[in-house]
Image (cartoon, rainbow, N blue to C red; front, side, top):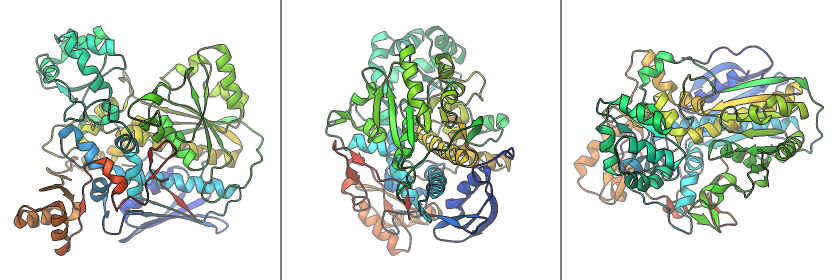
Length: 595
């Protein structure tokens, strides 16, 4: 399976060639993205060790990205997807629903790192176009792991406790006729009404709302067993009727086979140039470490996806200005807090300026248009149809700024008919992610870690950078569209490719289950899981330190599984890389190094 051929209008990487070397797992996805963006793929030279991608122009100038499994952790601690998930806390967060660490069966961090690699290359090209002498970009899968758990890490190390307790449990639910489903609503009254239609007491449903609402923040949702019982007592058409009467959004879990039957490969973003060119703007030469210095990003984002996109652009040096409603973003006060600000909010929004605008008023919309007239990027993730209704769509804003990169990070990209709410867990349910992230023998279930919000935010930043580079080439502004659906397709593509080839798409039973020790857990690389289990079984009960030492004496790689995120700042593997901001919140490092 491959992305469709790109229509040969101007592309950001036209006239560049791309060649790769090193471990294909570290370079293949990034190379495919570069090809879709116009670079001519000269092929790969597979080998062990770090991956490298070299972009070359006709004048002989080259730009190289070096991708490693471990960029900040000591050598040997992280050497593949499994050990990266273990060390950075991804296994811990994904496993909260089950009560013990579990590895994602999909190569989530390798995929995220590939997108970061392309981001670094695009940002470096933008810097070079303005005179910055950037020759090399370096990133690593361990850095992608820290970024992926950044919100959870900030909350775990905040000065107050979580608003809800951690405990195993959560959706999906299952009906009497065997349909596994997710339900979604942002309204507590709708939530209560849905369960009332299924016969649950209002008091019980109301008491469960807070846990359900906070599952995005905590990656677990210990709901009352009675709610699961009520779902199991109903057949699917009764559940659908309850959703219709209450206004809840419903999605039955789709299998990878279901998804394959309707799947049409598509690039994870769409670039649509405007017809009118703009006058170039005078800019200072950026420093090598911040290639986007001098760019302004106007962000009207909510929750995770768009704010993360803007946060990444800010890490690259852009000035980010958030558009917030009167009174400010209500998520600023979401517990736990650091210095009276939400630790999670800081993980996505530290360093951004903010302006309060009532976009529902004509005065507010005029103010936003004025701000957009001087920005390089306008970014939002409003509900479908909102921008058009408010007169703030790409056509409206390009009229006041022909050079604007107008970026929309959506749920479904208007590609799925009768789609449910475009939230992380609903998109996971609809696209087969619930199967792809869990091995054979486990019931399909979307991860309660916000996999697609984070990966969707990464793709959003990649799309914006591609749009800025295309504008650099053509002089015209660009609309760029990315989505949670695109993130899901990128994550499930390897499983769907296996299905096309007649291979079982899911990972084998027990895949990426870490090894238990008397006081913790140990993970080993995928390619030595079987011999490691035999050695551990023969060694008797050992501590985690003893298990790691035993495996290393036998010539196998092994690392400790992080099982409490609040220990990471003191963990020798990460202590030097993690810092605290002026509010006292833990901050993860930027995932690129430019030289």
